Image (cartoon, rainbow, N blue to C red; front, side, top):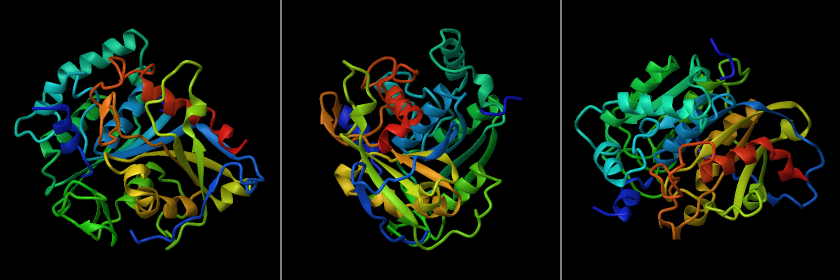
Length: 346
């Protein structure tokens, strides 16, 4: 066992729009403010990822493409790896609100082909990984059949899965007491459901965390903003926003050994659209504060070329045919952030 381990394009993105306790806002400071006095003692060789809706698809893609580096994933309201198969019609008919079972065999075969061509890591690295999967029964955007297929594919890959279904939650990120009504699907697509999804999935991804069941009411640390383009190679186009964000707990700033989690927002949950609500109100930072976990919040942007007005992550191929691979524009970009995260503090 391995141990690391868009009738229209607008329709797709609109349908995928996303659309805990409310934590105190951590101070946001630019990376060059002079407040960073300590180099992070950060393990980036074994990370975890999470995401909701298009962010859930992206977290799944990152986990699969870079499975040597990732050892756990939390996936909310999303479907199996490669579900759209680079085809808009398939994305609409099979990967959102469907009533029929999805056939995962073609997806599995495509994964094997990608491994053979060395465009993703070997699937053996997914074996034993903790994978937390969530579906809300009131979700009318991504149906249970799609989420079931995600679970089935991970089962075929011998991951360690926890599949949670909540009877009340709609298409949004469930929290204890912040956000819109639980069954709704509207901005900011964070839902008040009396359900602390963040603590549940992070506790599952980090079972050895000492303070996983004693989450504080406030986050104790700093939100750092940084230029995402600094992680692009010369000549590469930036399909992401200008600015990304990093939450660093005070303990990590003080030099303690810390781990890294990457949290992918959903469509219309980027800072450009709703401010820092996703970063500050999902409860991720509060849990991270107690458990020595640095959190990377990469950011998408709204564009019309390529056509992505809802600032979704690329789960159907708008950045190119290689979007699922390690060479895909967004996967490669985020991976560069993870590998060279020390640049943010320099």
